[in-house]
Amino acid sequence: MNTLQAMSAEKVAHLVMNQEDLFILDVRNKDEFENWRIEGTNISVANIPYFELLEGIDPVLELIPPNKKILVVCAKEGSSKFVAEQLVEAGHHEVYYLEGGMKSWSEYLQPVKVFQDDKVRVYQFIRVGKGCLSYLVISGSEALVIDPSRLTNIYKTFAEKEGAVIMHVVDSHLHADHISGGKRLADDTGAIYYLMKSEGAVFEHAPFENHDVIQFAQVKLQVLAVKTPGHTPGSVSFLINDQLLFSGDTIFVGGLGRPDLGGKAREWAKDLYQTVYGKVAKMTNEVIVLPAHYADLDAEMNEDGYIGSTLGQIREKNEMMIGKTEEQFVRAVAESANTATPPNFEEIVEINRGVNKVTAEREQELEIGPNRCAVHHTA
Image (cartoon, rainbow, N blue to C red; front, side, top):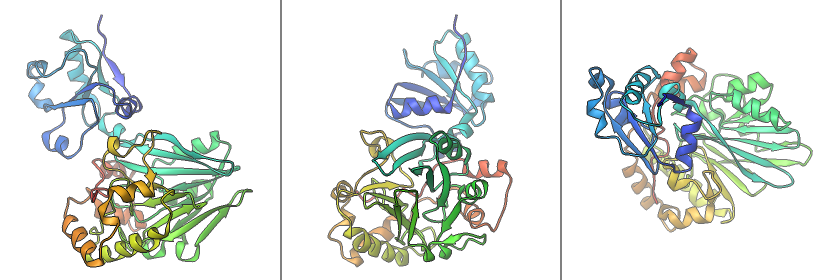
């Protein structure tokens, strides 16, 4: 007998990241679907709004491929469960609905080990539904968190399981596509929270202008804050032990950060040029780049299962990082930067500055949708 089953966001992320077959019937309105959807290799998707299926699922039946898992998706869960039940009644096998809807998909984080040696181990948290990346760096019994999401419990729980205490929390810049968990994570754990003063946060924090090096743990792990303006005026990257470059939204696996969100595309593109051709150019090809976002999971995930690449490999693929004059670079970046902005980015920036405070429900609403900080690809 066929039975309806719930599929968690964690399970969907597993299917996406492992490129397994899945058919998704998305019953949200067309504008919601076109703005943001679940994507991946070997995932086929059809969009038929829920209101078109109230009198029956006949419009769907001919679209469903044979011998595939069927996942019905809506915003919160209820509509997808209703449609999925009808598919089960029609005799379809392996029918699921997305537990918690697209809101749960937006919030799921997948931890992956990135690096380990005798001094440090590093975990990347992939927010598959948003394209956001954050990191937990552990040395001895102490930990540092980089670019945390507002979903702070996962970092606290993970660090505790690893036998570490979170002592430092850093944001590479003032985020525009999601709400930072940096300040609240620091408040919850007693950690020090670092951000560039020039980003305009009104709450208490340790400004990177006064902290070029953060040292912690018995093994003298050094975290060097490299000022790398371009995406925002106060963007920084973090170079750990001359091996790992946490590049924020300055350098991605597939491109460079967009400098147009402040309305000063050419001016900030010049800063980005100085960063790429000045500070980053001095780093060796062997440095591993770990960004704060990605745009294409399949293209940017490496064979070890995390989003990252060596600086040398990124240079080879990105023609904008080698041999361009400042004018050539600025013109190309400015011309290609006029793309869609992150949804609700102005309100999110004000929240991240500490100027506005909203409810948890409003935070969730503001984050629904894709990230668009990684859209400037110059490969």
